[in-house]
Length: 138
Image (cartoon, rainbow, N blue to C red; front, side):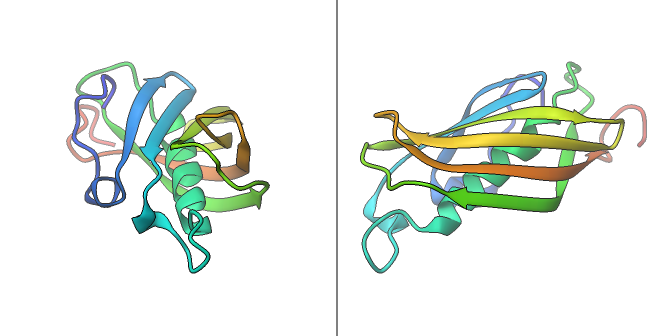
């Protein structure tokens, strides 16, 4: 999954978030804000924020640069800081891998709206795995 041509997960499809940029050490997800994402107060549920942060950070460390060598990440630790309320029409999550080794990596992310309002920040620890269809058999 190095060229963003693989279909999104069923969960991503259900929530409606899309991978719009992905390269070595970086990923960006975006999603439209809709009423179906609201909590009891009508604002975007914190679980949506956590999902975008987790997803973007996880995939930020999975770039392989090889079309036939797909990697996935398992979340080992996730920290979320809720900062503000989105006011725009879209959520934008930028994640960067900050370090790590062959299988364990660290990442940080910010979640903002399309007006530039900082909504949340996150950090995490992830375990990278090659998928069974990878050519190296890992």
